Amino acid sequence: MVVVFFAALAAEALAAACVSFSIAFPSRRIWPPARQPSWQSYLMWLLFLLSGGGVVGLGVLDWGSFPLALWIRLAVGAPLWLGGSGLALWATVALGVGATLGMEGQLVQWGPYSFSRNPQYVGYTGALIGWAMVASSALTFLAALMGAVPLILAPFAEESWLLRRHGASYEEYRRGVPRFIALRKRGDAA
Image 1 (cartoon, one colour):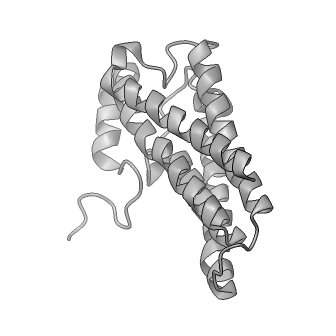
Image 2 (spheres, rainbow, N blue to C red):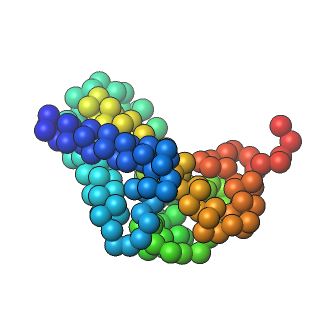
């Protein structure tokens, strides 16, 4: 269990470092990859898979080690986990697997992309935290929080790339749809 915890944390820290590097040095970015296939795309997907798999595995291995009330696990954790997973899947289908992997694609503004520019990242973050709550594991919760860091940072690395690829249409989209999620549309009365 300790090995899984530290392996997940290492993958998450390295993913966060790669995304941070991409934000700081967009001309030498690691994410999104400059081309497919590339060592950058393989590295980032390996890190994201190790991170997510580590959080899930840790939840199974450390199940119930933290005394979280059953009603919180079921009323908050389960909907967050299932809803986040559903949102991430819906967004992946809407965007397409190729574009999700960083390949060329069109600017998608429908479905979950009509209320969030990054519904996959929002969904995965919710799913990780919800799973940690369902598993009722402090180690899983720590790993899930660390796993959310590169998911929260990734849009900042992608925005300049998307602006270069899609120009004015992305700029207009960016002005009208929040980076993560909002309960009301931009421009609505406060």
